[in-house]
Amino acid sequence: MRVLYFGVLKETLGRESEMVDLAEGACVADVLARFGNEEQMRSIAVAVNHEYARREDVLRDGDEVALLPPVSGGVR
Amino acid sequence: MRIEIVDAPIVADEIVAAMKAGSDGAVCVFDGIVRDNTRGRKTLHLDYEAYREMALAQMNALAVEAVERFGVRDVALVHRLGRLLVGETSVLIVVASAHRGAAFDACRWLIDTLKKTVPIWKKEQFVDGAVWADGEPFPEEIAPGGRV
Image 1 (cartoon, helix red, strand yellow):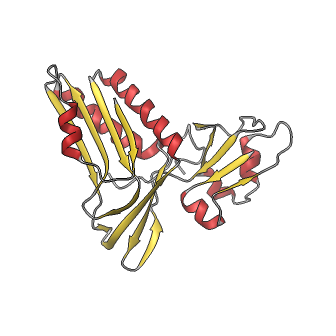
Image 2 (cartoon, each protein chain N blue to C red):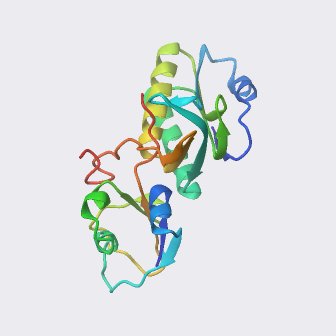
């Protein structure tokens, strides 16, 4: 499946997307686990095919997965 | 509803004028503009980027929800991407409604929710360096560590 990176993630990883092979039945949490940085990953939202996904959601071949850092807030 | 992500300057006056209809008693406008500093650090410009397809879908969903939740007549949500200079509009929200209370409430809810859930990021270029803006944490239902 294709994994997209945005914002500060794109910059620190040095790429905006890549193809990732995951085992059958892999879920969103498995994609995040590849990065090791658990603390940072807790603040990351994941979208699958343009919709926010939960950690336990199972991925399918051909899904577009996006890792989204907190969006630009601005002080109220 | 007018929901757009644009690369060119946002002409707020035209969008606001086009939103008015005979049954409206109020039009509430939020014009989000680039400030010249963040916590006292002088800003040169901001670079906005988005997960474009998803951001547009999220903005559409927010507009629909605002109409349902607050009973306003119509909503315009326009966000600009790319490099923006101090004083330029990055996001424009226009809410048209029969009564002002609903228009104010919907407008406030729209900007607060947009800034937490619509996938748009900004990099702040200062005189002495650049950083990606911290952003607000995602709501708990979107990221488990959202409120950490």
